Amino acid sequence: METKSVVEELDRRFGIPGVARICEGNGGLPRIHITGSRAEGEMYLHGAQVTSWKPAGNDEVLFLSTKSRWQEGQAIRGGIPICFPWFRTKADDPKAPAHGFVRTKSWQLESIVEEEPGVLVSMSIESDEQTRRWWPADFRLVHRVVFGPELTLETRLHQYRQNPFAVRRGPAHIQPSRRCCESAVEGSGYSTFPGQHRFERGKGAAR
Image 1 (spheres, rainbow, N blue to C red):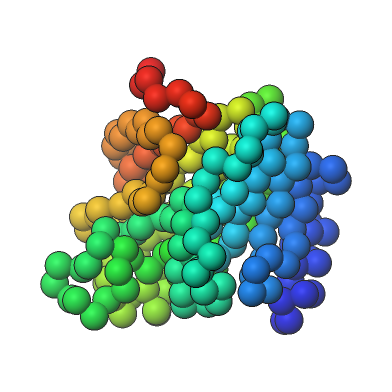
Image 2 (image 1 turned 135 degrees about the vertical axis):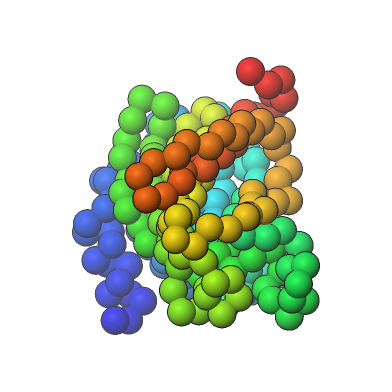
């Protein structure tokens, strides 16, 4: 399916008139454009990467490089990338993609919901033949972002027990103040490791 028809179908299914729409972004990549009353923002399905956040009444908060190569297999430079399952160079394989492989793959859009804190966007990605080339483990990663007066990012990793693994993950090259908390919750058949990152314009105190 051509990119234009994919974008149109996603917008038909998930778009919210006057609040969020799915359109073609740089390089023709599918992009979610947020125009809520509390904040404006942009998020690409490519890497599930947030590339813009402007709280109401404020200027752009995130940096985005003009040298980004907007195409499949290439990382978007700037914004808030997801580095998973390793950060920097893979210790046992220098030929593996730097900062992991999910930031250069297209994610699945799951939902867009307007809530009291802002506009919530949820995306997910799962292991496949390509990811197993670099990392022989089965997983499902869910990334949720709330665009509002605060920018909140939550990443949940579902690890299937028949193939346990260790990870090093997190957003990188973040300019605003960062707060994060991590915990582990075990469930039937998998483990879930939540990590939450919250940003506020001009505020850096943790709570």
